[in-house]
Image (tube, rainbow, N blue to C red; front, side, top):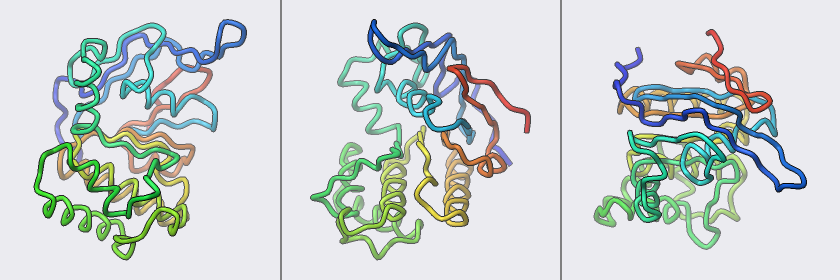
Length: 233
């Protein structure tokens, strides 16, 4: 059962529009988007490749600025955060699962995960223990000392998910988290993420083209031609 939502949204978009390109050729990726997400929710954004799903996530997190409209993170206008405050906020309270993984090739799986944990000022042994526990939870404990170049795409995906969970983030943003995994393994990962949301009252916003993920979500939205609409379940 979904935990009771907080009255204040963890993240919110108000009339947000985002255009990519330049004055000679531009594409409207988000158009007057209104969106709210609360603690305890798993939200799915469905759409085909190139529909703007990734831009939606990066704009939510302040990695891109909207052309118009307002984005609020943890109750505060994202424009009111200093660059340093926003950096720390993303490091400590937001977990990312990037479609391209963004793992550092020179670091092992454990070191990639621990690197994110350093922002919470915990002892290194505690960080290493948590990293190894997360790898075990995701079924890849054998990768602890492996480098990204030694991993399959699916293994990199699991390490990236472990990294996103490292800091007990209040908000997890996942870009196609099952995209490089076999079908059944992908659904198992979604179940695990759903349990993480329920157990710790987190918020997970996931973008995907996989319709099967909808059955594990509390709310489902579709994105098309820059507009986001909520689907009935």
